Length: 300
Image (cartoon, rainbow, N blue to C red; front, side, top):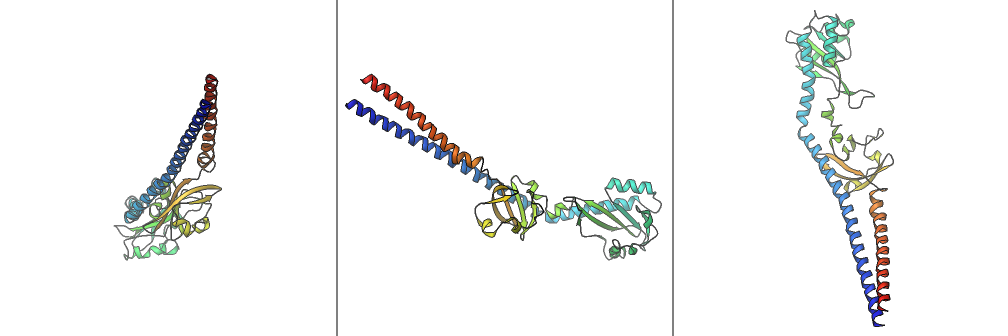
């Protein structure tokens, strides 16, 4: 009888220990998995912040680099083209420089050569898109550009005209579609970030790695001030949930994170792991009871 009671007590102790060990292990696994996701968001945000900081620090250089590239192409035209240059050579030069067109004038603004031959013999003042370069022709400015305009249907591509003075008098005007302006606007910054990232300024989206379907403001995505102030928040874009974190950097709102894996990560540590733990406990209990029953039989 005493042996039977001792066995029962031993079984209870063993089961309690097994349950405690399994539950502790389950807790550790779940905490580790949760911590891993939180740390991931933090690393994504840190990376995005460094990208934006570098962009801000290089803002002046980026603008100079963009403008210098345009003027360098105009200078090549200035050196290579005069009133005697053939249409075939003009076409070849424009193609090699990636230009839509160019115009070369004399000191009075009369067009002496151009990729569009019907403009030769006319004045830059005769055309709306070139008469604004009169200040360069008159020596008021040494060089100038138009405000870039986005090319429809071409992401990150802008049309711009640039003008410089010729050493022999007159000016050169080039027309080009270019993607180099993105180093000034920063609209490709999110592509440089490791996580899914949105970069905004004054509420307007500057760059995004998401497919936003034309949305250009944080408010149109449902992002609120309270969400931005939280440690992390959930945002649904195109029916996909993301876990994101946000911070202000040099006047920019930087948001970065990753997919919220409701059907994967959360399901694993919220349902699968506990279920497996419970199954393990049942198996262990069966094994222990089997072993105890055998011992009891031997005692008898």
